Length: 132
Image (cartoon, rainbow, N blue to C red; front, side, top):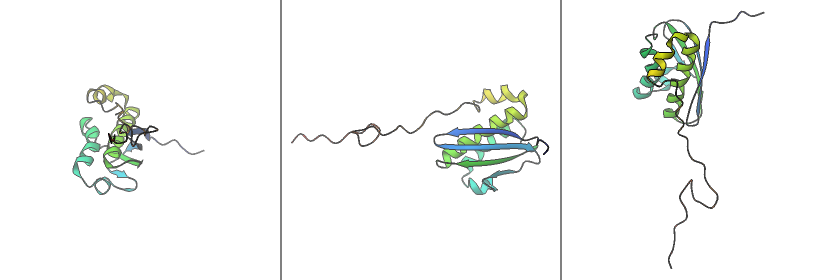
């Protein structure tokens, strides 16, 4: 029978993005979809957002993070990675619960695109009214 790995798993979601995160003891290497994080998120704003959880918990250099993310755009994917890392860290070390909650890292951003309604051109926009 295979031995159990000491990996901690977490799932993060934002908009239409879903990130599956795996955390294991290591040296601080972060890969997203089998690529380096800085290669996957070339804009520093997104990579800093992903790193914010690890830096706040002061655990950045002691764990390796493997992320599989799909759906949405870069903003949603970065937010999903952030929540997924936070949830995985909570399973990895339950003492971090208070630290993660004080910065709302475990809170799901529930803002989603509103669905299109019948008879309208979009979610809320109707057709243009013509007086004549």
